[in-house]
Length: 150
Image (cartoon, rainbow, N blue to C red; front, side, top):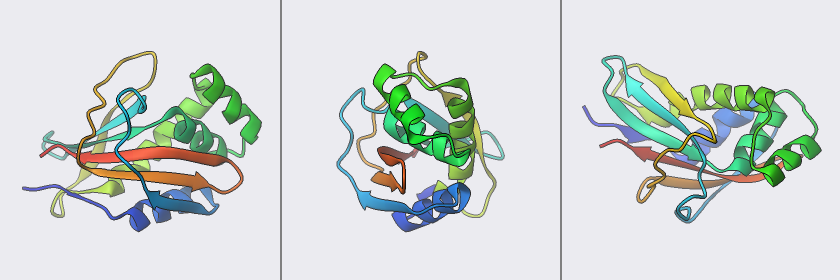
């Protein structure tokens, strides 16, 4: 069974619906090593790895804040100190869960298997895959990368 990565507009649409605000998406270059610091790992119903989503601190902070209407200044403070407040971390976990839509296991079930937040370390080799710049209306811009496990 092969894994397909969703198109950029589908990712943007799902996040926009969740956040109840416009999310503008553009293709981005592959992020530099160390740029992505928050990860979600996805698997199918049998436990087979399907892929990984990586986000930079800016996207996690802005999206986490936008989900519960936390002021953008709080997100900017998190970016500055490179650490998410617990509520924003929990919110971004919900966004990672919604990003199951980013993978298609040929009709099979896709689930978020694990999340990695700083200070825990994870691999960030995102050569290949889909790299996006997401600009959340009223908050700010950050990077999101999706990579298939295959």
